[in-house]
Amino acid sequence: MTEIQLGVIEARFADMIWEREPVTSSELVKLAAEAFTWKRTTTHTVLKRLCDKGLFENNKGTVTCRMTRSQFYSMQSRKFVEDAFAGSLPAFLAAFTQNRTLTKEEAAEIRAMIDRMPPEPGKED
Image 1 (cartoon, one colour):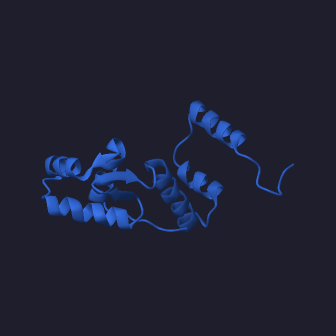
Image 2 (cartoon, rainbow, N blue to C red):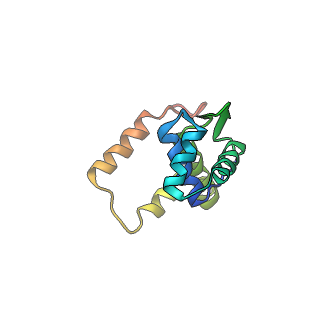
């Protein structure tokens, strides 16, 4: 699994793009100047870095997603579970719920998610 790490400011800038894409790079320069007090060159440098990481594409000044926010955070979550819990989702859930209880709504939502999951190939009942 490819790992893409973002710093806090890179993540905020990526969120800015995800919220507005497709967006022009000149619009991003204006937005980044307001949000982060960046100069044009800083905006273009960070944008290039995010494009090099495979999140976005800048085609003739129009920035579009190569990976949606949902896809990115899903990948990050899977990587975290893989690294921290040897890929065990039950171990992650046990750790996550160790010092708190799930509400009835949360438990129902998790059950519904599990019920919607297709069976693992070759492991059908």
